[in-house]
Amino acid sequence: MNLRSPSLLFLSLVMSACAQVPAKATSPVEQPVVAAPEKALNLPNQELNTQLLYEFLLAEMAGQRGNLKLASDAYLDLAQKTNDPRVAKRATEVALFSRLPQQAYQSAKIWMKLEPDADQPRQATVALLINAGHLEEARPLLEQLIAGEEGNRGAAFLHLNSLLSKQANKKAVLELVKDLAKPYPQVSEAHYAIAQAAWAAEQMDLALTESKEAARLRPDWEFAVLLQGQLLQRTAPLEVPELYQTFLKAYPKAREVRLAYARFLVNDKKYEAAREEFQKLLKAFPDNAEVTLAVGLLSLQLNDFDAAETYFKQVLDMDYKDDDSVYFYLGQLNEERNQLDEAIQSYERVGKSDYFLPAQIKIASILVKQGKVEQARKRLHQVPVQNNQQRAQLIQYEAQIFRDAKDYKGAFDVLNHGLEKLPNYPDLLYDRAMIAEKLNKMDVLEKDLRKLIQLKPDYAHAYNALGYTLADHTTRLDEALKLIEKALQLSPDDPFIMDSLGWVQHRMGKNDKAAETLKRAFAIRPDPEIAAHLGEVLWAQNKHDEALVIWQSALKDAPQNEVLIGVLKKYTAQ
Image (cartoon, rainbow, N blue to C red; front, side, top):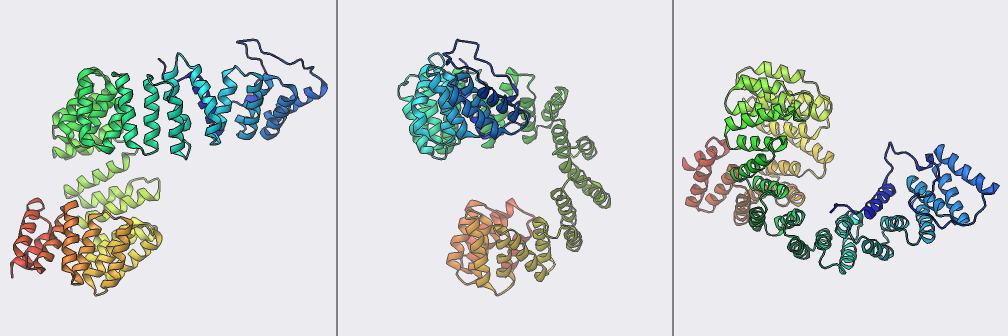
């Protein structure tokens, strides 16, 4: 069975015409007026007099010269005067092309009246009604169209939701789809259409029920299982693996479901299991470059470097559409192997694509590792850039070179120079503020962050950084609290902003609140600096043993963290 209903496909083309005109479309007014050849029309006994001929010529010439409004008006007038279905059809086409839906609707109504048993005028009319949001008026016409699709009704339902997708009232769409599907309880696609509409209307239980019914009626239908899987990921993700595994056991050649399962495993960070599923796909489709690349990437993730290299080279032999990405991954692979010269060679092969700038930064990073800092900086200066975003990225990375070497003055100078060229670039302002804190230039920090807040009033981390700094370095605690609360309002689930809130609460002497806040932050993200703050608050509450457990546990995961090390020295030396 075709996936698309011919009638509703025509209807969707009409909908597209209502929305926009393709840049290279051929205007219908450039084509001659012809009668539909497939069947004889009931034509009026209309003499072609001088007035009618003049209007025809006027309409055609107006269309050819780009005056589409005049062409549409003239054809609508002709359709009303002649009662000729050929003219009404032409009037509808010209109005649609001219993006004049009201005239198109008037013409389509005349056309439908003149050919009451024909599908095309009904399709055009219902499309225009839907486009205008008149669902109730469209309902009886949709019922007739679906009823007429006796041999292709499933395809009609599959296409239904795409026709209705732009409607703002999703609940009204759901009720319409349910009513249209009611006469066809044994058509699996009807239940699928209800499930899609229910999902759009955020009625997840109904969507899941209907997707299961669609799958029951067509047990081998991948679309129904895929939809069910998407719904379960939103509502009950633990049930997704069993759904896919059960289906694949019954239908092992189901490519799309296996692909969905493999992607689910990747998102769930179960890389070994994901690779097994992709390898099964690769066995079935050995010449598929995308699947081969996916197996290579998963092998790289699993540190199986030899396998990753084999798969990447296979992709290159397949004349893959995006070789630059493969060379970039080969560069990463050689970096992991500590084969730095080979990594540079791979990155050098990345052309002018989205991977070019990251590859250049990777090369500079390797040069720094090799002790060639000035060569790395020179390379960054020579990278051609296309826009200010790329220019800012290179400035940020050059500053990072100095930051990693703990040369904060050098990083500050690089960012100063960058901000001379890009004075209002948010990322550069934020980075300079963070370096200014290392150099105890609190005036620069505050000035940059306040400017950043002015430029981006919804930038939560700017409020947070300023609030935390005021809490940590000054006695302006009330001001700090307001800034951090604003940050938390903009990003309520951010553990680092929660950490700042806990710290300012501690500085204000509210240790019970501080401990509660910091424990919540640490539960979301067991970061070593959050651990350091939480331990300090616990210590202030005389819970020394609990504080030590938090610190020592965090130190195992981050043995080089300076903040954590500093806190331990401060308190354990007492």
